[in-house]
Amino acid sequence: MIRYLIERTVFLFYILMLLGVFVGLGSYFLFSRDLPQLPNDLRKINLSLATEIYSADGERIKVLGQRYPVPLEDISPNFTNAIIAAEDASFYQHKGLDHRALMRALYMNIRERKILQGGSTITQQLSKNLFFSFERNWVRKVKELLISFQLEATFSKEKILEAYCNQIYFGNGAYGVEEAAQTYFRKRARDLTILQGALLAGLPNSPNYTNPFKDYERSMRRAEYILTRMVKEHLISSEEKKEALSSSLELIRPREDDNPSRYFLNYVLAKLESKYGKEFVHFGGLKVFTTLDTRLQGFAQRSALSHLEALESKMVHGVEKNIYR
Image 1: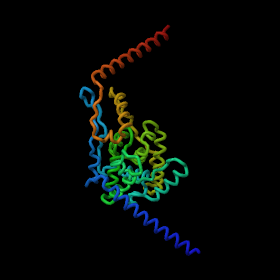
Image 2 (image 1 turned 120 degrees about the horizontal axis):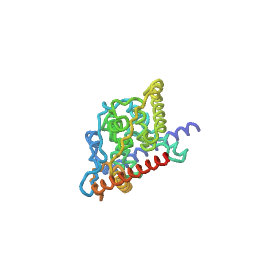
Image 3 (image 1 turned 60 degrees about the vertical axis):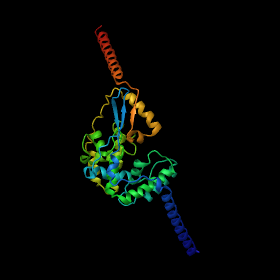
Image 4 (image 1 turned 45 degrees about the horizontal axis):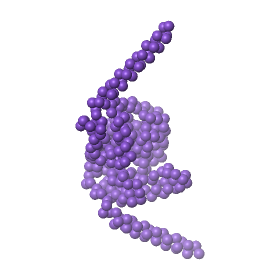
């Protein structure tokens, strides 16, 4: 009886494997014609055209999606180790799909009855960012997986990691680790400390929620979690984690947006992103022409500031008069 059950189990296992192969081959032949052609150099994908926004009088008032890609050797291992620990601990072992991470994420999401974990590998995330950002269905997921396999078969792990580090969004308009290092610490990506690398690695998962400019404590908790992951994956020692947490983060003050048209631009961007998606708007190489008259906007801005200064002066003088009465 036991031997029979074992034989049946093995038989079913082989049947499922065979079915999986047929499904995989069928998916490939079904979607392969629609898959984009991979470039011969992954660095080319970060040379996408920026989107330009113009006023009604022809002045360029905003440029979106500018990237400053750097080679992997110019990115500190303090960051690359952190992003691997945070996003894909088995990056150097899998071939585009991490079966264990996928099953673990599925189990957690079913148990909690909500989406808590994604299970996507760095290669899958790169595939999604490159080609399928505008679709949200199972077809996109299949295409994303097929491209992941192609990426893994065509390029080295180092090239995939380099492209990913130059692609991801870190909040505050920073795309790619070089610009993120400048935005948050005013330094090059190659000079990031362990703590700075961990903090930046915690941003792509939720750039607004864990933004240190908006919620420093939450951002530091996320960085501490990633440092713990790095210790678990033997990327740093417990002593290095302790030293990192006691070191200075050296976070700079956020850059102030003094563009007088920023509120109008934010409104335009919100409308465009809701209709076409953020990736297409920021990296589609669009030329957007608006109704804004920069000359009149300048007059309105100066008039409002002058009025506010006059009100403030009256309030100060009024307070002083009351004091001396």
